Image (cartoon, rainbow, N blue to C red; front, side, top):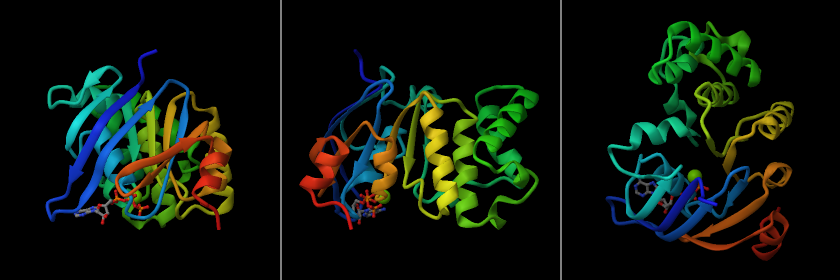
Length: 229
Ligand SMILES: Nc1ncnc2c1ncn2[C@@H]1O[C@H](COP(=O)(O)OP(=O)(O)OP(=O)(O)O)[C@@H](O)[C@H]1O
Ligand SMILES: [Mg+2]
């Protein structure tokens, strides 16, 4: 089976000299939900930013059998939807509805279809009542949910969520678990929230100093790296 994501020997150094990724090999297969665990600064965010071509280091990355290249970027970005760790940066239009409809519009859908999808996605994330509001006035947790709606509205094949539970209240987190369970897409969850990872992930990888130091079931990885408070 061809992996949806195939990353080989990914290495990346930031402009200031920090070696953030030091040879990461990672595959994601259909229907998997993989938790990316590991200490602050271990390279998790840097790695997922490579999957949508926002950063480009050494190594080889294929997404849905497309090589990571300038030419393939629009196709890749239609297939892989990402909610950033700092979702603030993701919201920029005057209203929540326009913001969520922006992605589908960019895919070339009609305004009506884009709006229909945006409304549905806002319902899925429990944010339909905020449709007419300004994204920058929302609370941190609300921004998170709107950013997720923006990704869902594009119906990607892969979901990459970087710390999706930060700022969420417990009921919102419970709703997110339920929603993600229902969604058929393969998922990458970057998280420090072990109960959340345990509720969803089919396996885990553990980042350490820019490398994958171990992988296995959530329980194995948590035990091996003593990754619980
Ligand atoms: N723009 C940048 N310039 C220089 N170094 C950076 C930059 N962004 C991140 N780094 C460094 O790269 C390394 C990996 O950072 P990254 O954000 O990928 O970690 P992370 O595993 O996502 O951490 P966290 O759990 O805190 O989100 C860290 O040492 C970090 O300080
Ligand atoms: Mg991070």
